[in-house]
Length: 300
Image (tube, rainbow, N blue to C red; front, side, top):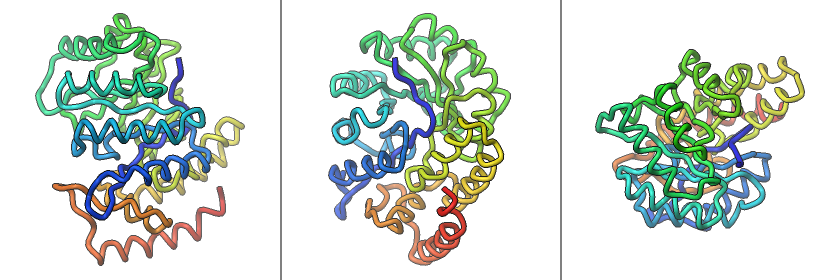
């Protein structure tokens, strides 16, 4: 089964000037990533404003991404939704359209027990072909629920197509525990600023929202790591940290969208209740991006 590795870009969701899903730009953003060497794509997740999209919009987003990128990058669609039934429908749709796999976030808002977590993920895994790979997605600071290593062991015992986890909380101890779950269990780190450190710990890659704008440093970090040039990887990681901090580490996706416009891609604004940056904030960000680009992009 295919897995996530290297740079997996958490894709933004583009809108037109009326706030509707811009499917042409979805294709353009997919090609933008592939042309810059991105290894895997992850649309429909946190960076993609998942819970602000309707089920039909999420299906359209998934299909447009697969249509533009199939065979050129591993495409894992994030399908986690607020209800189990919708999650299953999105999972089955992803399988039907030819995605390489899916990601599924933990249940959100309502507290769930470890047993409920096992039942939830096992049910979803059993709703798709048993050779269709699934990544668990743990982002406890947003979902309010946490996936423990022992819980994951129970899940993979019941669902062999659960092949890995995306972990988006900066906890090295937990990350090491995840890496040790099973020899072939894949862990991808969701904290952009820890990519190189995560690789050194045994993670197979990163899922990066910052890379939706600037994939170049993350591709370069991975290439340097594979070649054993750790000094270069550390040097580029410092540049990646700088741009991640400028873009607020994904805490406000409007920064990503303004930065993409700065790079020549008008992906629209944010969907309510999220808000766009003010004109003053946009101007300040563009000035900072120019400084960073002058100092960094030539290194990659």
